[in-house]
Amino acid sequence: MNFRRIVLAFAALLLLTVTGAWVVMKYAREVTLSFSQAQLQEQLDPRFPTRTCMRGACVELLQPKVLLPEGSDRVVVQTLFVASLGNRAMPGLTKFSGRPHYDQGSGNFYLQDVQVSEFQMNGNAPNFNDVVRVLGPGIVAAIMNRFPVYSIQSHPKYGAIAKLALKSVRVSDRQLQVVFANPLLLNTSHRPPQ
Image 1 (tube, rainbow, N blue to C red):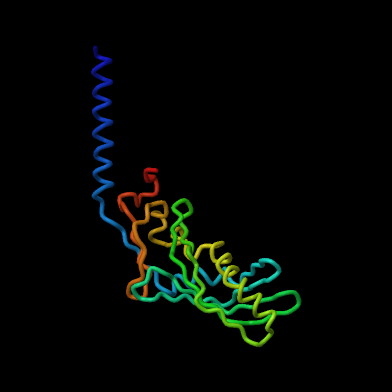
Image 2: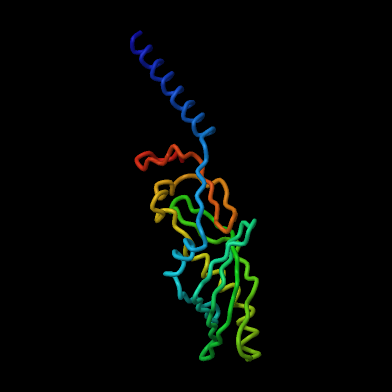
């Protein structure tokens, strides 16, 4: 009889704990972090120059410049590039954008749905231009899918929330606004539910 009461008491306590945690998680405030162009630029610069090849054509991206267009959910990056095919190389300028994608496991932001809006080459080599114009945007997208544009873990104050769930990302006042759920998990010794 005592064993039954202990089990029932334990089950009731467990149910209250789970229900309480659910209520806290459901109604907890959000944490909004803002990242300036300069902060994003600072994390992106060390990753450049970077080079990728596809079907014999190579593109090396140099000197990235991060742009945050107001009201957009996309991060724009403008870079110089050097396209090469065999022994021929031609410099140019490209501008592309992507939606920030948050990888909760690593705490990193990557660009997904990369779209190249500008791909200009200097000089004139018709055969070369045609190949690079066809393959270049795909190579740029492949490069940007490879490494993060920002790592929340490196943020001095909020690195501890790297594993929290992302609610939204938008650009406002020339800053990337990132909204996370449940600030009660800022304590690094407490892990968020999976």
